[in-house]
Length: 506
Ligand SMILES: Cc1cc2nc3c(=O)[nH]c(=O)nc-3n(C[C@H](O)[C@H](O)[C@H](O)COP(=O)(O)OP(=O)(O)OC[C@H]3O[C@@H](n4cnc5c(N)ncnc54)[C@H](O)[C@@H]3O)c2cc1C
Image (cartoon, rainbow, N blue to C red; front, side, top):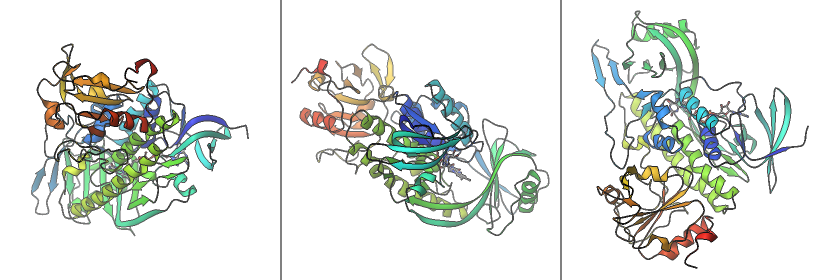
């Protein structure tokens, strides 16, 4: 074998988790290698719900509009009842608010989401290497070496870190011997992408809801296909052909006016709820389904995977630029409890679905997830309850630049940097400039003006307070007036270097 080539990060798996991480590293100009053992991108619709928090992440990564344009909002659900009548249910409409611009889950087939992410990655100068399979991992104190096979043969690549974003059957997790405790749920199902004649494309058609004989066809916006979903007994032989799916549909609905014409992707799967015992061993991390799997109810899987990577990306970049390893330790500390909670949520929703109950709660949109208990969240006892505190998602707010043009806090946050908001602070230059930190003074004589009081409403700030927002859009701390020393201490601790040219105050 040729001598190992070198890179900073190897990402194993180019699903939603791997692509998100790759985009985040690419926009920071870090060298990495993204490989996937599959010969081509994934072609199925399976994780089709994009939750509001993931939409915010995609906005930051520069791909939201293309993802929105690739799908649509969730359609009305039409329930065909046993007595021949029809019932309807719509996803509760929710208008955007100044602090949360995305309120509604989008329906985008997973292969289209991944295609848009891949296109974004290409814009940034990278592509996944398909037909490249990770078959070995060796760790040392300074590096990790990956053995990769491809049609060109076997090669080894040395990196500072390796991320296993290689799905529920993760080779990386198994190779590291990480326990994947949990349970196999008592549900097996068929999911397939099909063309269907005889059904309107404007609603999600559902039969037998709340019974083991349910079947549903959900229009996949951005395509002409439906997602066919049906629970099946464990001992049933599956026929995933168009003819087999039509037969099962007819048995369950009694309707012979609907014909499944073509199947572009189909799978029969058993639902599991499992969580990796650890997300890190040495220089190797797990992200996405490699670290947690749960039932598809509530559309949480892909979203949780994307947000794992979004949490890990900036920390890897910071540590590769000399930041403290504690940042990487915070990845598992922050993300594993989230996955644990999501596991519980999707199991509860699965139970509710068995009784024709959507069980939907605000939790599903993932906007309230946060990292209050993280080592990176610095709390002050005096901060009121009910307003933004350390660890919370930093809300959006429409504001105006001093130049007169409207903008938003999310515009100020967009990119790989940290952001420090100085709220009605007499002199924001008392904080020394740092590489990778954007400082904005909000107030009548600042560079940003809270024209309509939206910042005040969303954050509940008092004059003189400072809000430090992490690169992934979570609040690191709300510093009280006068605690400039604490701000410097925090920034030192996360490895943000002082800029010699900007040191004005010592
Ligand atoms: C049948 C089914 C239905 C689902 N329905 C929903 C849903 O409705 N809503 C929802 O939110 N989620 C759903 N999910 C979950 C969702 O699809 C996943 O959470 C999501 O795909 C996770 O993304 P990922 O990038 O972590 O992993 P994956 O998408 O699994 O990607 C992992 C990648 O790693 C590659 N890989 C594996 N091993 C290696 C190796 N050794 N070397 C190189 N590459 C490797 C694979 O080829 C694959 O491309 C469903 C999952 C399944 C299986």
